[in-house]
Length: 170
Image (cartoon, rainbow, N blue to C red; front, side, top):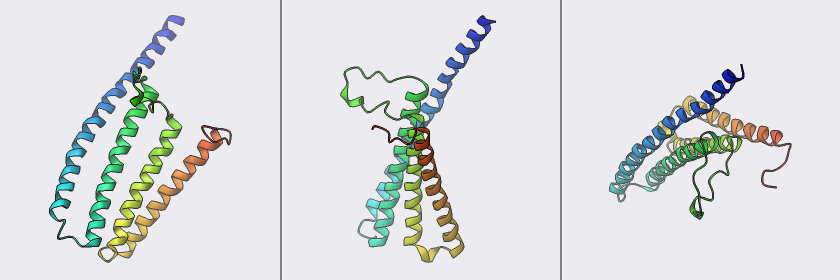
């Protein structure tokens, strides 16, 4: 019986390597998103002298939104790999010293915070073009944003409760 238990444990531990497929897929998606970002940037650059202030702000918000999404992808890829697969070989390289400092709970809070930031940018874009949207759509987008905010705050409170009310790093 002990041999079967040991075999099951080895299979379960080895199965975590299947996650690598997802992380490599995210890396490829990040590359595709970078190409999309460059096209957005090129479009903004071409319209530089034509856009009014509101148009330029909207264009910049679109670029910021893309950067936040890309950062979210990197954060999920690297932190998830570190948490579920294995440690990166840091060696004496100080460039990688930041790796491994985000556990699964911290990752959830950072992802939720990023989603709130992305949602905020989308909501700001809607507010800057308020005359192009129906009131009901503005209301629903605001409600959805508030749900994201509430969820992020709730995750942070749960994380603090799980940590025994202590601040991390103290």
